[in-house]
Amino acid sequence: MRGFIKAGVVEAVRAAGGEIYAITSEPQALASRAQQDWELPFECVGDPHHEIAATVSERGWFDLRISEVNDFLIRDTQWEVTHPKGFYQPGTLALTSEQRVLYRWRSIPTLKNIGGAGGRPTAEHVWSRIREALSEGPADDAALDRTPVLDGASPPFALFAVILMAHGWFLRPRPFTYQGDGKNPLERFPMVMRRIVGFLALWVAAFAFLPGLWVGAALALYLPVAIRGFRKIYSTFENEQVAEGLGAA
Image (cartoon, rainbow, N blue to C red; front, side, top):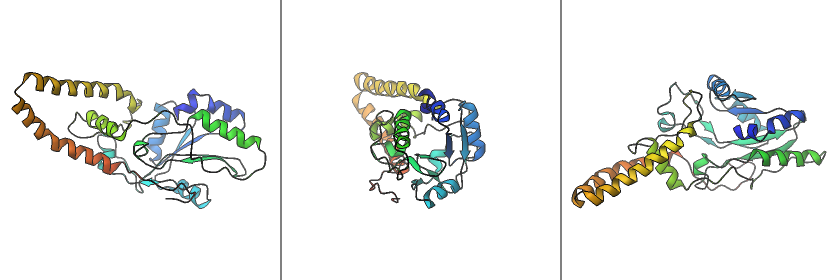
């Protein structure tokens, strides 16, 4: 969402007579709080019962992938999180006032996009495709964009799992969830990377200066903790390989 602000797309869309909305499966109270805390210049709309997502599907625009919310994703949040029907994966939809589809993209969770947590079309790419569609005049609906320009490469899934473990002090994985404090959760990323470096340095130092038997025993005791954490991450972030048809689930 912030990419649209930095790229000046919000102003460009409004200058062309359009408007931007952010639709989320979070409750409206949380959507409004994020809009205020992040100073977003467009309205954030909560859709916890997926009424908007259902309308989008019924009209044949696209089907958003729905994922289940479990204790891992809501752990450590500072409020009661309510997702009665789960949460939907990201998608982008641009329409004219006559409901002609100018652009559409949706995320399918895979290992490549770390279970749907990464890999978003850039604001510049989306806006350029919208302008192309508008320049064509009356035409058919735009096809689903399967090869968008993304906002940077996602890390390998294994590294992503290590990062989440580091965020939980290597005892359990902890997601980068919004805490309602006005801060982007990814602002904690540099701190987590320092933890990874420090954690590896401690193990190297231990093997270098302590008896190998002691360090090996400590590592053997820690491995079940790490395995349990990695399994939790892999089971939470779904990974699929789905044919990108309009109606694919």
